Image (cartoon, rainbow, N blue to C red; front, side, top):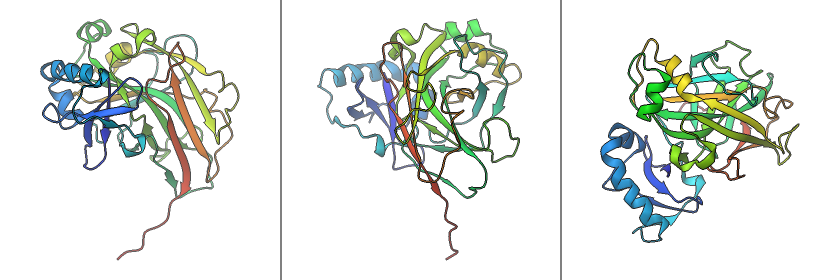
Length: 293
């Protein structure tokens, strides 16, 4: 199942999206926003699955064309955001990774331009994956998290950094994070998800050209239940918490610094070569100081 949020309000308007990311239908009468759904997941999901079946059968009333440019991030205002920086290697990213609070970075849609005021520092992108959680109690174990299915959704991400990703402690070093338009339930990821491990390849390009081995893709594994276990050692997580992993040695993150006008694309693909989240495509632009009225 794939979900997205259309613009028009602070938390967006929830829509259900078909498997091919071509059609959508509003979830009117079920949940107005994605946060509404997350807060009452078990009760609302049976009705949403019925609607999903109708959409797949071309029987959903009010279905319309799905346009990524109309979307916000799936969760424009999550209650909390945590992220980690990791190497991209064919071994699971797990509890040894350092988590940090990412609440200060701007949340962007998959097609939003990124405006920067400073162009004297190197600007780079760091692709990644994030999960959206259920309510997760304090000191839950990875096995608890896996058994309860506390991971509700997964999304692709693109972190924008002023400087080398992870190297600066400045509060604005992580300029923004963009999220794929589509958030996918774990059972919608097929062979890429085994209930605990996510295995995908990251494909990045700058102005249509893949840097380094980007055309082949950087293969990554993530053990998200283990990361969530680390996150809840000292505090519980509220439904809607976003926990992301960005890969600092991916081809895109190691590419030369970006220039104004450059367009960055990120495509996360499953083992079958499919793109479950859709493509993130953003342009780097210069911020203009607003004049007081």
